[in-house]
Image 1 (cartoon, rainbow, N blue to C red):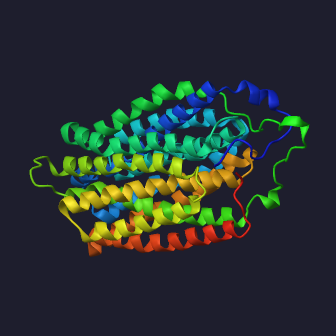
Image 2 (cartoon, helix red, strand yellow):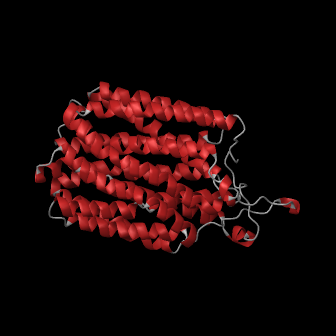
Image 3 (cartoon, rainbow, N blue to C red):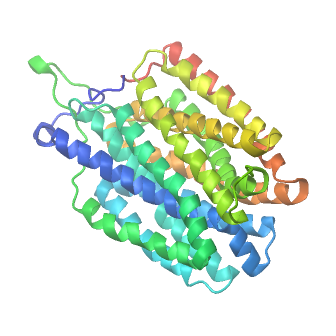
Length: 422
């Protein structure tokens, strides 16, 4: 179990004592809500992609390039965001993203052509890039608060993020079909304006753990040369591949379900059907976050890590093979396994890094995941245009096999002495 005893640092024990369980719970929930807004606004475009295509007459490759710009910015800003969060406070960085993201959604909503649309997406991605390093870093600091479990905190935050992920396709598609795709982005302006001020006022957890009983000597943070351990580098590589898979998956998921996931008896529009089915599948993914929060408290967490990756691989290939109700069922299994992997990986990373560099480490993670991952939108767009949408998921499944190799390697090296801090 990842507990609050890792990386104690002398000096700030009064801060630890003042950070109450109530403050920790408020932090987890507000961070989770920020996570929900983050995924909600970033998935508006995939949900209304067909409407944008109809207005501008663009092909899948051009639409993928538009998404690519926002997703690249989503990753490019992550490392600077992590460094600033460690220096200025993660809650304030979360507030900046929320307010800035609202402004960017408004810019997209008033765009009048592909160029201004692309600039709006890039601005949205840049502001949205602040959430993950700051949000993950501040949750990692909870290991310094007595009685708090990092795995459970990541599970709750992941669940809330997943709710935003699931809500966006159905709500954005319905709003777009009824009032136009720009209205979906205007709705995206509102949550950040409401949540940003609350996070600006929220204090961060201390970056030092409570001193051990009896006055024993405490361990200090690892020196820089020991920070980038081999297991941590493997996790960075894993997150890079999973970022590519995630962006390719989510960019074309609603459109794929709209095309191949038709269930007899449903009489809704093409766009709304795809958004509705994607939302159902993504909503079930929240179970993955809760499951991972519990599995990370067991001694078999690395085995569970590998098993979840194997299930995700089978589901990706299954999505390419099935249609109709079977496709929807496989998609649900895919989202559960994928989000289980996300919470597990984040918790493993939190256990590997010193507290004072937590947001910076997650900044590296998400820079790699989202900059490389951003290429999935345009790459998979070209593939979909030339070979068909099912080949997108076959290709993502092949990449997932490489991720499984890394998971098995990580499990082996941690079992051979590179133990997790726990």
